[in-house]
Image 1 (cartoon, rainbow, N blue to C red):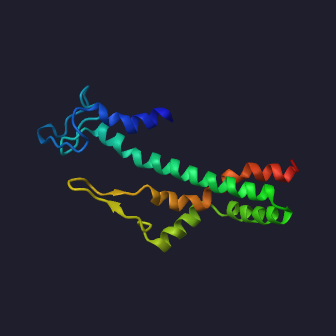
Image 2: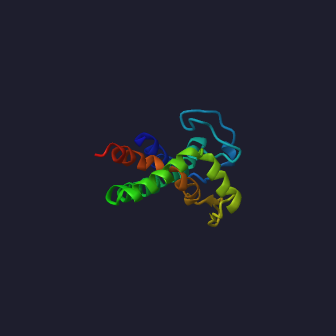
Image 3: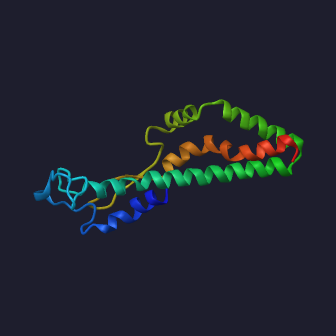
Amino acid sequence: LLGLVLFCFLGPYLFAHGVGYIDVPRQFQPPSLRFPLGTNALGQNELAQVMVGGRLPIVAGFTTALIASMIGVIAGLAAGFSGASMDNALMRLTDMVFGVPQVVPVLFFEAILGASAGCRTSRRRGQPARPASRCSSAMCCPTSWTRSSAPSRRSSATGC
């Protein structure tokens, strides 16, 4: 995982030109030592494009995992430090969330908020639009917090 993060975040700095550099005379170059994956129609290095393209999914995944873990820890602490009634209420909520496949609420949120999930794209001069990483995190966090609260659920069920 560390190798993938280093590949995506530090890899593009290894190339002489920026990722957006257009070099039309070098378009459609086959894979070589200089261009390990070749070049595209604009003469851009495909390997650098893959490296930069991997940044958003990594940031979105880490953000989703962090937020879901925080919600799960808070739910687990509330169940552990409260009385049995709060523990039972959180257990029923957790069971309901476990009972629904994760894709159903994600599709529901996407249908309500629209295909772009209300996310704006940032656009700078001369650069293509980039979707914000918080979009996919906002879709996945409401359904993945139960995976973080599951260990506290098991410990409270055994009376530990």
